[in-house]
Image (tube, rainbow, N blue to C red; front, side, top):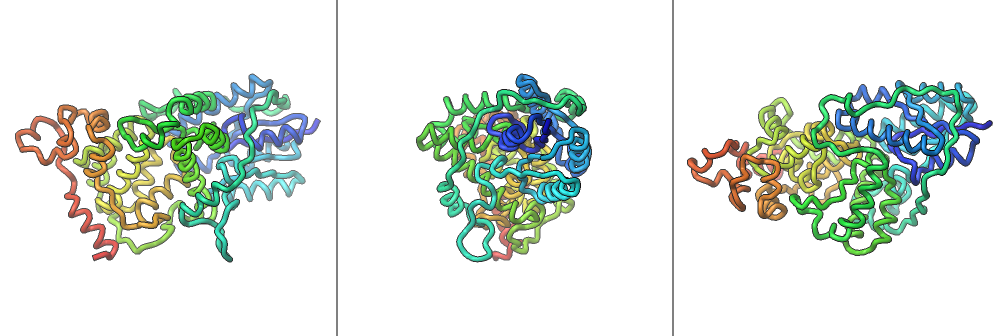
Length: 459
């Protein structure tokens, strides 16, 4: 019997899975394989929240395969070595995998291709699995341009692309008897997990997708920036781990129609946009995409300010509320992400890499493309066409948390303060401030703005 390997990476699902579908079509038996990549673990990328969510995903994927007569094979170590061993054990002629975008993923893919070809085997790489539109599928007109550096023209081109129709999960998966598997990981064995971390896995993702389409999608355009309303989809962890297909999400949103669906599809496009930037410029994961000569304060020089920012003790209630949500849930509202990032890099004037690293320690949806490039967008070193914009935390609070409900939820020491005082507690008298344990602002906003402008050479 012929055998193929379906190598799962950031696509831990059975529905709308091109590599698995192709493997099943090409061979009598298929090895569904996931490798716990020690290169990723050595880099510290598998932070506790993502380890726990991954454990949920793998257990759910294995359960889905067993419902179809199969099972998931888990190995650990170097991906290339692990795949070669499975190929040797089973006699597989092909390995099917989704295309990656990071420099690490691209290098891993090239190593795997060379190793398999040297042994007379074939690597089949599938596009538009991790993203709705493959990186490089749409490019600007003009010689030498390999990616879009500005979102709006990318969105126009992306919107004209005809997406493939999503397909269902396979009815049956026949797995060879031979290959052994390591035990499935367990969430309960991971230490340091955020108390409010959501459940992972395709089953949980599909349930959330269905509920969001019924009850949240239509209101998304009007409510997505309402911090207290919590009206976003919260599907980003499932997109990061691939328990949901971005292609299917776009199709389902478009079929619902309306302004909410259009706004949501635009956000999916933002995700694709960052993936195509990183695929073309892998160094943007750690280097300025557009260097501007910033004289950032280092983490060491600004150690006290950075620690206060991380702990949610900056003295700016909305900033602190968002940072505390991050620690508790391993997730943060997108408006909160923009605000907290702006506060660190433009008000405290600390290198964006410091903030990006901290976010990756907690965010369950933290991936290199979206995390690093969103941080660069806010820092003004990325793709933002207005690189010197600064988000004022008081203005943002009054606009997106007008009655203080979000602050009350995450900064309970201020729960007795109504709006607008809850957003500017430093304006209260000394006697009034003594009634609650909350710090004074780390820096005056005008002072922070002056330091940013001077550091960027704007004065």
